Image 1 (cartoon, rainbow, N blue to C red):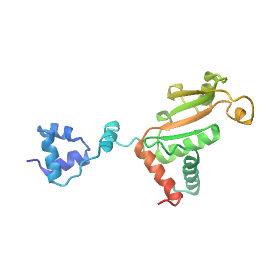
Image 2: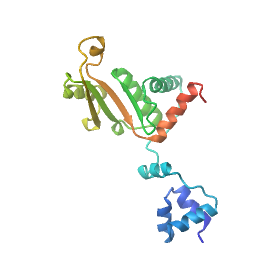
Image 3: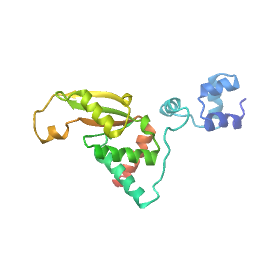
Length: 199
């Protein structure tokens, strides 16, 4: 028999897997699962278990609520930017792409202030036209955002469309900001749904 208090401590509070709990109690995983069910302790879903495995130290972000008038403005702006420019179909990450460095910088300020994600933890991708030197685009975004080149994980080359206002606008390509965290993605999408009157 496994003690309920100890089982709750390791499985619920310490968020250990049933396999790890079995090691603690020196018993089989089946026995742990049996007593979890017996005590009415809900088992984590596969996605929850994977998330905990990927984030053993807990969430890689903390939520800071807006407090001042300026905070509320930046928060609303950040959520609005993702609503308009973010990829809502990706269920596992936040992805926002744009050509405007000022817009990107505002979004990064929003992410840092309200979710406390250090800039060095962010990842970036660039989409450029085939006649734009990749190195030139990379150096431009590195300088503008003040980030390290190792944070750029992807470059997509698009056939050139020739001259025109759009071609001028994307001289240095489309920059995409990646934050791979399903939980944070769901939090942001929940805020968008509230603003849209969908909840």
